[in-house]
Image (cartoon, rainbow, N blue to C red):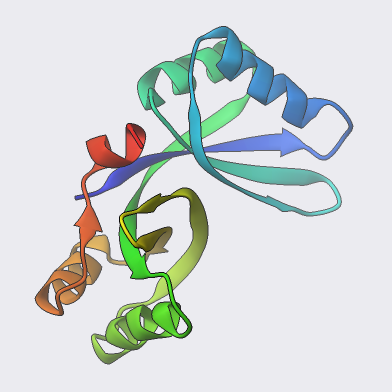
Length: 143
């Protein structure tokens, strides 16, 4: 029930983001979700792609520093306070959210949010116990 995410450390200068996306495009890799956080010197681009092993290999070959981590994709009710209901469940289970970002696709009538937890197994257990749908990686890669 976990999803592979690639994190790319990129210099905060013009053209570097384009270099990453071009490299992925040249290898026929489709970006499914992304998050970009930056400082004055560098950025961290987090991606969910349809071919994470190939993406990691491709980017490393082009000189990028790449790291793979596991995240969790969760269906969130697409309505006011939908996110609050999920965060309340996590809080009641003492699960810490390290970061999160939205997915570009909807899943039925729900939105999809990518979560990074300090303890993903505990988070999945709390979420599923409370009837929250956690998506399989293959489903996310193929959305």
